[in-house]
Length: 109
Image (cartoon, rainbow, N blue to C red; front, top):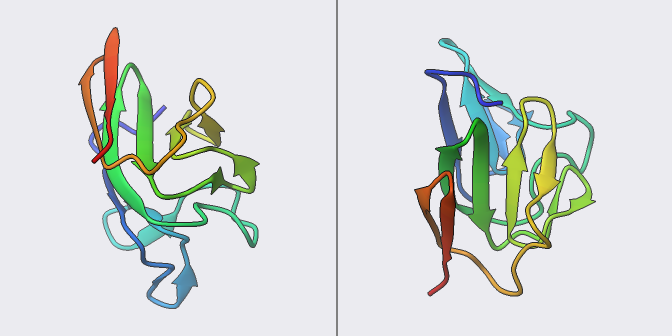
């Protein structure tokens, strides 16, 4: 589950202060730290366009097709320790996430 009160950033960046972060980071209060398995290929393989916290998970959407080296077609969720694909993913880039826990909606443009 996402850490309550945490700040996350995602986009197309792959480094933060010389550390490989692969397009998503969490602020610790003093540094940005990578999220994921911490091995080469961790994080996302392409741009993350949107983040949303819902139902105890942090969701990411974008142009990526893998998260931490696992299949994650354009949408993934963070369970607090690993990224996982959401309901088979999407067949094209996802640019926004909105809705409630019971009615999550993906927006493609």
